[in-house]
Length: 451
Image 1 (cartoon, rainbow, N blue to C red):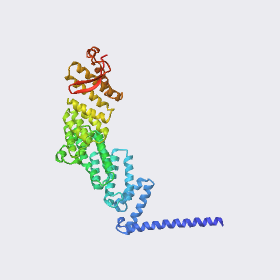
Image 2 (tube, rainbow, N blue to C red):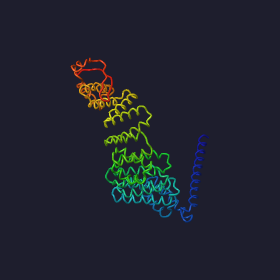
Image 3 (tube, rainbow, N blue to C red):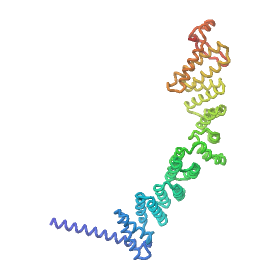
């Protein structure tokens, strides 16, 4: 009984399986027979459906020569029957291109691959899950993968894919395409004009996209441009100068150009013009500092002071404000405005008592101020300068680039102190209090002798 029960169970299972297969096959057959895309009449549809089943089986078993025979038949008799006709075919011809043993064989296989993409787009572009733009993108990427040296052909296909995407274009596609262009530029395959024009055409797509990742993708795009080396100052000026002249009040344009120019460490007149226009519309301490630095490098210290003072007036962070005062003090020192230099150095010290650079400005201002005094009074100013440079030394790290200069100044100052005889003649004892008075300088210190 036990054996009989098992046999009955197995027979029942087989009957169920057969019934399922029969039902599925019947359902598929009915679907084919009712679908006019498989043929003009039921007989043609049934024959083409059977061919498709043979085609699918040959593809699944990787019998590609047989599968390709069925593919060609289906392309002729029922090209609209199923999108899988093309999906299977594209897979096969992708492999054929990779496995081609000669350039001629590769070209033939690639042409067939592109034809299959075109047919798939023609017959299923509006109904495919991937969508029309997605199919165009797949085609472009496939062509680039197999034939990257044909830049004209690659660019045409990518442009078609980008155009097909409209305002819903996959921004990753733009970056993939632009990376191809920047790579080509770095290999001297693509001319700079072509890359700059593509940059100009493509970057606007990020601004019009509704994609939530647009900001991040745009940053990637701009990073590719900067990394390519094409974003040098001359090229950027060539790319944007006319645009800035035509739209001098466009803050979006000015900010973009300013970011690129500053990212490339530009110091041209065009850069300064863009930075000043940008600052005039949206003044920030960051831009003011950059402008000030640029004008300092050009030795235009009055312009530098203008932006430093504006930045300081708008700055609320104490550390940043102290640093701005140091920059202002240093610039006033360069202009020989010694009292202003001391004023701003002391303002920085008031906020940040350990500001080594503020003390360097003080010491330097005292030394310059001593030039207008008589010999002994001039020598006493070296006490003040020495005090300032010693405080700077205590607050500098050993690796600071100013350390060597500060040590040198300390040595020079002590070597110019009044002699013991000079002080003795005037009744001055070492270590006693003394107020230095030399022109605008009037500050208390202690007496020291030259060693």
